[in-house]
Length: 606
Image 1 (cartoon, rainbow, N blue to C red):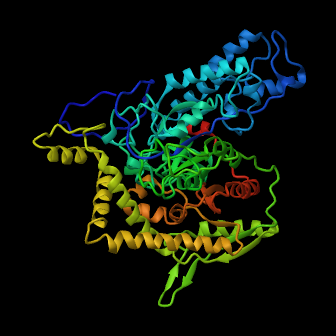
Image 2 (image 1 turned 90 degrees about the horizontal axis):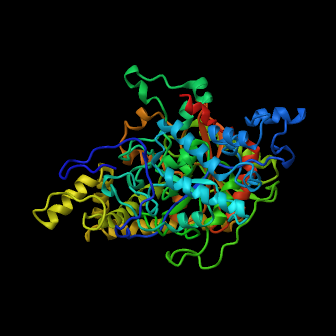
Image 3 (image 1 turned 45 degrees about the vertical axis):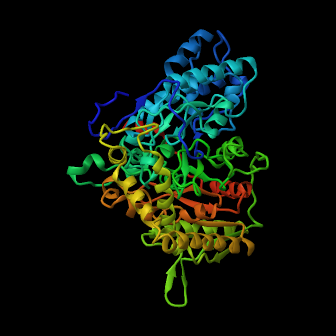
């Protein structure tokens, strides 16, 4: 990345950069742990009887299958390899739409990690208009794919993730690859170490494609405020959206008719991974039609995650299906001596049942409103909750009833206070965490040098955007000596009350809570930016923040298409460290709704 002249004001940057692996010598970012990525591309099993035979013409019954795979119907192994190189892998396209458990094509050598990597890199290039990636680590990815291919050749592959392409949200430290947090403040910062979660994935042979886009320092709910430009929702270019109701924008704003991804992990949902502080995994998952899992606080290490809110940050997992989320969770969960908040006991990976049974479960539906002693308070009937979301929520509850589950209404009376509580606690921790970016150790440093104080001020003014600066100011206000008791201490007490609400509900016999994930489907970019970041975050995260403050696991599952042809997701919240039960219920629900998968070829043709 070209350096700008000293003193030149920072410019907003857009576009994707291609990075090579570079050894960094800059100091390690302080702070705690890291959110995590996840792989979307996956292999599809192919019967060995249909494997191509050198110099053999396929039998008539096989020809249709060969044509479907795009393979040559005659010629030898060399012709097959040439065809694969030109196309990026005959079955690579199918593998990108399959499940992580379906790895027989890799194991049997019918598709190689290098072919799959080439296919993914080609897909990234062809869907560049989404702006999902900040950095594409092509050289690193191809090198890792070749190493994986060699392991498969020797029969020493590392497991289900070996050779599977992944991407990492750009607030995870990645050794030798620039980590920016979508901010001018970290321009050019190359960490000398990997986040624990990134290291675990690479230890298992996963192939790192690059770093995905986000709101600056993960502060936002639309993935529109990073210096590399906003992320576009791939469903903006889907056949369903175009046919049902592509927005009729003012001709003046025609280029902005695409819809947002949600945030702050917008590049993740569009390209596969995220982190979650107040809903930043589940929100974009709901808007982009993928599965978004926020594990229990402490289940996955945060070491290497550039922190936003230490007490709420959780590595998030975005996948195409619930089974894949379970696979990735099993690979990442467990104790990390570098993160004192992680669990001490070893985590036992699990497989979800093929035919989950929910008939013996009790599903809790939070009330839409409750009546306090003085005035009525809305619980989950938040301002802006669309009638369409309410209808989808109601139909989902009926699915559980029809399956024999007990469905009851429950009360979470302190939910109305969650937004205010979250804002106070979040900005207070942001003010503390952002204090480390002073221009002395890493990242941007201003040329103003009349004094140390003036250099600090100029560096932070040039390096942070208005959203980050605003949250720092708010947090410092709440932490002032004269305000500390009235704001920060009270917010901590309210947080405890919110957590206790969940404890009471689960102790009453409820197994899983079912709620909406977002207030509506994704909105057009031109509509989203009419309101300021703080207002949008308040509106968009109101249904997801409580789980973060209580430290509970939650998952968003794509449920239906809205009248405009955009994804709508519902959220399941479970007991602490009961991810297996949560994911089992989510898998059953996923099987019932049969949500359609977007075809990225539609994006390529946009």
